[in-house]
Image (cartoon, rainbow over all chains, first blue to last red):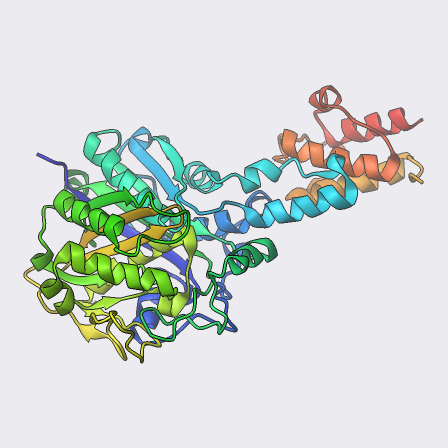
Length: 399
Length: 82
């Protein structure tokens, strides 16, 4: 029998504030964290938790993660240490880019002052696995630790990987999530050069006027425990991570397969992994980037994977309408948002959705949050994440 | 043109550099060990870069490994500069 995996703690730092509840409550209330076309974590102050030395030794992308990690660890009741041997706790964190702020700063140093002035901390600051390294050291977690790097699917892939580690017996618990701090001149210019960013600076997924995504930053962490571990210690269980499915489009380096075929396979495989049917679902947390291509192919994918009839009945909303696109953190932040939405039996809205686009004819939850239907003892949802490179990752969550 | 490396100028530069790494400035005394100050090899490379920029004294990895206290570092830089 497959070992069940439950969620006992969550934490998030997002453009809607520091804290997972901030994210859910403000999004559900229809508030946006986007200002002047960017979604920054303006309330975030690293000095509130990190010493001067810790701040110097972490890029912003790792700092955001440590805050989300601290919240999740405390939330799970792990403040005095994990409930199992530390060797049995895995740390898996997704990121799309890594410490790009450091890379850019140090490249300036290289050009202006030469190689002899490069900071000896450059590598530990910029390396993509700096996030799990920081968490493992801070909390003494000694099980397997690494980063997943699959662009905007990285956060979801990390959580799925952690799920598999617990199921396979590699670990009894995991600290997992995603983080990104990519609002830098080079990253912004690069996404802009490829035409991915919204020229109007508005994130309105699935709307006919959508014109690209809005860059965001942030992090989220979930504490996962084998159900038997959580039960033995009488932990408060927030929900269950039922399944994970992943696939590759093998179609184009940035454009999604217009048929949504790859994404649909990931959805189907996640549902099969979770042993649930499309009819069991109460909610879909869409990838919904607000780019012309994604929102169309995702709509196709949902119809293909769930069947048109089920897809039309389900409330489908995009967290990115409130916080922009958090890239490698998106999958983790949205998993947290999904979990809290299920817990409150509420589908938060896709902000800004007003004009129907031809063919984009599902229920994207316009206007305001709506109570979930199809709740039978528990509410089940999928959370979609799709990354450049054609990487698709889908999580199935229940609460 | 590098600054003149006297006990006083070197001490000020090194103490200021270490204080920026994390420890409180009043903890950074001549007798304080790098272990006590939680200053590791990566931090010392940064201190060495500052010393080189200020006084033109190049410190290598093997020089740094011998250093135990703030005073050791100050003495080494002063002796190398003279």
